[in-house]
Length: 164
Image (tube, rainbow, N blue to C red; front, side, top):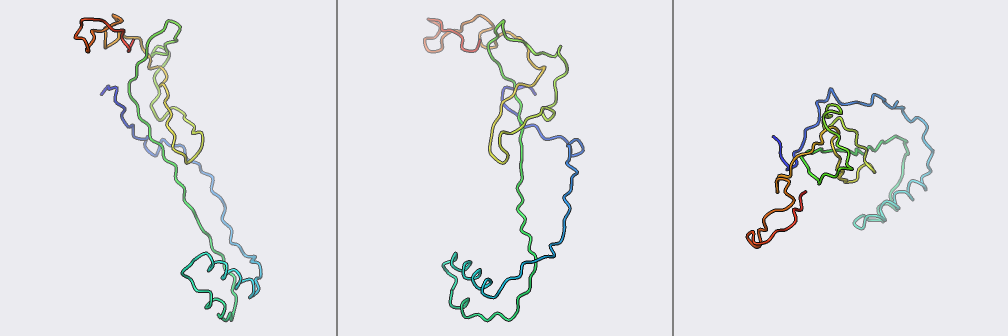
Protein backbone atom coordinates (compact mmCIF):
# COMPACT_ATOMS: atom_id res chain seq x y z
CA UNK A 1 0.00 0.00 0.00
CA UNK A 2 1.19 3.50 -0.80
CA UNK A 3 1.07 5.96 2.06
CA UNK A 4 2.79 9.02 3.46
CA UNK A 5 2.96 7.19 6.80
CA UNK A 6 6.24 5.37 7.37
CA UNK A 7 6.12 1.58 7.25
CA UNK A 8 8.73 -0.68 8.82
CA UNK A 9 10.47 -2.86 6.23
CA UNK A 10 11.52 -6.32 7.46
CA UNK A 11 15.15 -7.26 6.85
CA UNK A 12 15.96 -9.61 3.99
CA UNK A 13 16.16 -13.37 4.63
CA UNK A 14 19.37 -14.55 6.26
CA UNK A 15 20.58 -16.08 3.00
CA UNK A 16 20.85 -12.59 1.47
CA UNK A 17 22.88 -11.12 4.31
CA UNK A 18 26.61 -10.83 3.87
CA UNK A 19 28.32 -12.66 6.69
CA UNK A 20 31.82 -12.17 7.93
CA UNK A 21 33.41 -15.60 7.84
CA UNK A 22 36.53 -14.65 9.76
CA UNK A 23 36.90 -16.63 12.94
CA UNK A 24 39.42 -15.72 15.55
CA UNK A 25 41.60 -18.53 16.70
CA UNK A 26 41.22 -19.41 20.35
CA UNK A 27 44.26 -20.40 22.30
CA UNK A 28 44.56 -21.70 25.82
CA UNK A 29 46.54 -19.47 28.14
CA UNK A 30 49.20 -21.70 29.58
CA UNK A 31 51.57 -19.18 31.15
CA UNK A 32 50.26 -17.70 34.40
CA UNK A 33 52.14 -15.19 36.52
CA UNK A 34 53.23 -16.51 39.89
CA UNK A 35 51.50 -14.64 42.71
CA UNK A 36 52.62 -14.56 46.31
CA UNK A 37 50.28 -14.99 49.28
CA UNK A 38 50.69 -11.29 50.07
CA UNK A 39 49.65 -10.25 46.52
CA UNK A 40 46.60 -12.54 46.68
CA UNK A 41 45.56 -11.17 50.08
CA UNK A 42 46.04 -7.56 48.86
CA UNK A 43 43.86 -8.27 45.79
CA UNK A 44 41.17 -9.79 48.03
CA UNK A 45 41.24 -6.78 50.39
CA UNK A 46 41.05 -4.42 47.42
CA UNK A 47 37.98 -6.29 46.15
CA UNK A 48 36.36 -6.21 49.61
CA UNK A 49 36.93 -2.44 49.93
CA UNK A 50 34.65 -1.90 46.91
CA UNK A 51 31.73 -3.63 48.66
CA UNK A 52 30.46 -2.05 51.87
CA UNK A 53 28.71 -5.22 53.09
CA UNK A 54 31.81 -7.43 52.93
CA UNK A 55 33.87 -7.87 56.11
CA UNK A 56 37.64 -7.24 56.10
CA UNK A 57 38.36 -9.24 59.26
CA UNK A 58 37.70 -12.63 57.66
CA UNK A 59 39.95 -11.78 54.73
CA UNK A 60 42.76 -10.65 57.02
CA UNK A 61 42.56 -13.76 59.23
CA UNK A 62 42.07 -16.25 56.39
CA UNK A 63 44.83 -18.84 56.03
CA UNK A 64 46.05 -19.51 52.49
CA UNK A 65 47.06 -23.16 52.16
CA UNK A 66 47.65 -23.38 48.42
CA UNK A 67 47.61 -21.20 45.30
CA UNK A 68 46.49 -22.69 42.00
CA UNK A 69 46.51 -20.63 38.79
CA UNK A 70 43.60 -20.92 36.37
CA UNK A 71 42.25 -18.95 33.42
CA UNK A 72 38.94 -17.15 33.33
CA UNK A 73 37.43 -15.53 30.24
CA UNK A 74 34.83 -12.80 30.56
CA UNK A 75 32.78 -12.23 27.44
CA UNK A 76 30.69 -9.17 26.74
CA UNK A 77 28.14 -9.39 23.96
CA UNK A 78 27.28 -6.13 22.25
CA UNK A 79 24.60 -6.24 19.60
CA UNK A 80 23.87 -3.76 16.87
CA UNK A 81 20.40 -3.55 15.37
CA UNK A 82 18.99 -1.54 12.54
CA UNK A 83 15.46 -0.74 11.45
CA UNK A 84 14.43 0.66 8.10
CA UNK A 85 11.18 2.38 7.24
CA UNK A 86 9.96 3.79 3.98
CA UNK A 87 7.24 6.25 3.09
CA UNK A 88 6.35 8.64 0.32
CA UNK A 89 7.52 12.21 0.79
CA UNK A 90 6.92 15.35 -1.20
CA UNK A 91 8.69 18.62 -1.69
CA UNK A 92 8.19 21.66 -3.89
CA UNK A 93 9.47 21.23 -7.42
CA UNK A 94 12.12 23.55 -8.74
CA UNK A 95 13.25 23.54 -12.38
CA UNK A 96 16.82 23.47 -11.06
CA UNK A 97 16.11 20.21 -9.20
CA UNK A 98 17.21 17.05 -10.99
CA UNK A 99 14.50 14.39 -11.07
CA UNK A 100 15.94 10.90 -10.46
CA UNK A 101 13.02 8.85 -11.73
CA UNK A 102 12.44 5.27 -12.88
CA UNK A 103 13.89 6.09 -16.32
CA UNK A 104 17.33 6.14 -14.64
CA UNK A 105 17.01 2.50 -13.56
CA UNK A 106 15.04 0.31 -11.17
CA UNK A 107 14.68 1.43 -7.57
CA UNK A 108 16.75 -0.63 -5.11
CA UNK A 109 15.09 -2.49 -2.26
CA UNK A 110 15.35 -0.71 1.10
CA UNK A 111 17.97 -3.12 2.46
CA UNK A 112 20.06 -2.85 -0.72
CA UNK A 113 20.84 0.81 -0.03
CA UNK A 114 24.16 1.08 1.83
CA UNK A 115 23.88 3.13 5.02
CA UNK A 116 26.87 3.54 7.31
CA UNK A 117 26.31 4.75 10.89
CA UNK A 118 28.39 7.64 12.21
CA UNK A 119 29.18 5.71 15.42
CA UNK A 120 28.42 2.10 16.22
CA UNK A 121 26.05 1.36 19.13
CA UNK A 122 24.63 4.90 19.26
CA UNK A 123 21.02 5.74 18.44
CA UNK A 124 20.80 7.60 15.16
CA UNK A 125 18.14 8.42 12.58
CA UNK A 126 19.08 8.95 8.94
CA UNK A 127 16.69 10.05 6.21
CA UNK A 128 17.63 9.13 2.64
CA UNK A 129 15.91 9.45 -0.70
CA UNK A 130 15.50 6.10 -2.46
CA UNK A 131 17.24 6.38 -5.85
CA UNK A 132 15.11 6.29 -9.02
CA UNK A 133 11.79 6.92 -7.22
CA UNK A 134 11.34 10.66 -7.84
CA UNK A 135 8.51 11.97 -9.99
CA UNK A 136 6.83 15.29 -10.68
CA UNK A 137 3.10 15.33 -9.94
CA UNK A 138 0.41 17.91 -9.35
CA UNK A 139 0.13 19.18 -5.80
CA UNK A 140 -2.47 17.06 -4.05
CA UNK A 141 -3.51 19.92 -1.75
CA UNK A 142 -4.17 22.73 -4.21
CA UNK A 143 -4.18 20.80 -7.51
CA UNK A 144 -1.19 22.92 -8.64
CA UNK A 145 -3.16 26.18 -8.37
CA UNK A 146 -0.64 27.66 -5.92
CA UNK A 147 -3.25 28.58 -3.34
CA UNK A 148 -6.07 27.00 -1.36
CA UNK A 149 -9.20 28.35 0.24
CA UNK A 150 -8.44 29.60 3.74
CA UNK A 151 -10.00 27.33 6.35
CA UNK A 152 -9.78 30.07 8.98
CA UNK A 153 -11.90 32.60 7.10
CA UNK A 154 -14.04 30.09 5.21
CA UNK A 155 -12.71 31.05 1.77
CA UNK A 156 -13.30 34.78 2.13
CA UNK A 157 -9.57 35.29 1.53
CA UNK A 158 -6.74 33.30 0.02
CA UNK A 159 -3.51 32.04 1.52
CA UNK A 160 -0.42 30.73 -0.21
CA UNK A 161 -0.25 26.90 -0.48
CA UNK A 162 2.51 25.68 1.83
CA UNK A 163 2.84 22.35 0.01
CA UNK A 164 3.87 23.46 -3.48
